[in-house]
Structures are given as structure tokens and as C-alpha cells.
Image (tube, rainbow over all chains, first blue to last red; front, side):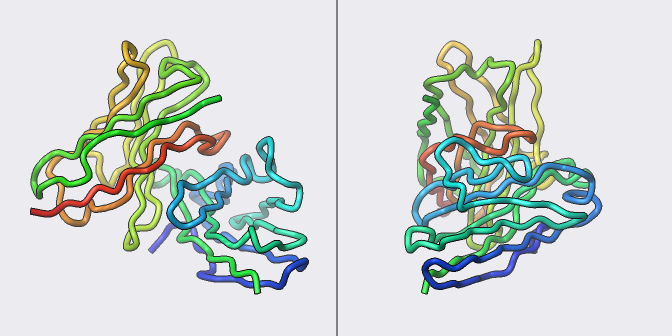
Length: 111
Length: 121
């Protein structure tokens, strides 16, 4: 059971927009801790997609965006492409656990 | 460009010590603006942050509560690398282990290639 809760799967057709939710609590996201998002293609290391809630590292397309409100965060992907098919993870810091925590991951399928 | 290269055995016997090393190029383990982490991933536990080492005028370590009694992360400034030691392993420690650069404000921006470590006799 992950500290941060994500839907196991989402799907969308090419060109559509999908949103992946990440639900936390007052000890992590709600405590004003940063939320980061990662993309992982099976068999490879995770790749940083969004850092500090809504910032994109250099090279990440602006089709990817992050937001945060209260105890939840979300990742939006617009103009869905086949190459976006991957697993997506949110990550934050938990004050009660005094450690970094990840969501359970969401598998994105492009139909 | 920062690159992390992991090395270490892929098979460890139960009750023994898991040891991995992460060599850094393009940055310094003694950097005052980075932290050096170990993260593992398994089907049963998902992604799990294990701990980190970082330098801010002196060396600091943070460890996850779940492994705090068994883990040591050490920097090696002479070789510009850092290491993970996890004692008294059990089959539940079987996972892909990653080293990563980053801290709470920036996320983990650079990752090693991953090492599958199997705990089995």
C-alpha cells in the first residue's frame, strides 16, 4: 500500500488529453512538500518529467504539465502520442515518515 | 552531463550483505548542491527510497525508516562515487536497485542504469 495513491491505469486515444491523479495527505502533499513526476518505460530507469509541482526539466515537451491543490496533485498529458505509453509515478516527501515516498504508479495505454 | 554507473553483484545469499557502488561522472559527490540517493523497485513494494548522502560543509545521511537499522550509504571522494550496504538481507529485498542524483526541491534528475539484485540461496 503506497503512501501516495494513483489509479492503476488510464487510457486515451492519440491526440487526446489524459490526467493522472496523485492523492496524498496532510503529512506529505498537503504539508506543502514538492511533488515530482516520473515516466518509466518498462526495463529502463524512471525519467524525471515534472519537478517542484509544475516545472519541466529541459527537453521535456510542454505537452506534460503538473499541478497541485490541497492534498492532491495531477499530471496532464495533452496531444497524446504512442510514445507516451509508459508507467507514471508521483513522488513527494512525507513528514511523518521523514522520508521520500512514491505513488504506486499508473500505466498509460494509448489506444 | 551527469552520468551514474552502477556496479555490484546480482545475487546475494540470505542473511548476507548487499553491496552496490555508483560511480559519478560530470558532477562531484562532494557537491554542495546535490544529494546522492539509493532507490529500489520491486513488484510487491513499488518504488522505494532507501536513503541518501550529501555534503553541506560536512557529510550527512538520511535513511528510510523501513531499512534504517540495516543500511549504510557512504561517499568515496577519492573515486567520486558512493555506495550502498544493506545488511541481513532476505528474499523481500529482491529488487532492482537504482542510484540517483537529486533532492526534495528538484526530484531525481539523473539515474543509474539499475541493478537487479536477487536474494536467494
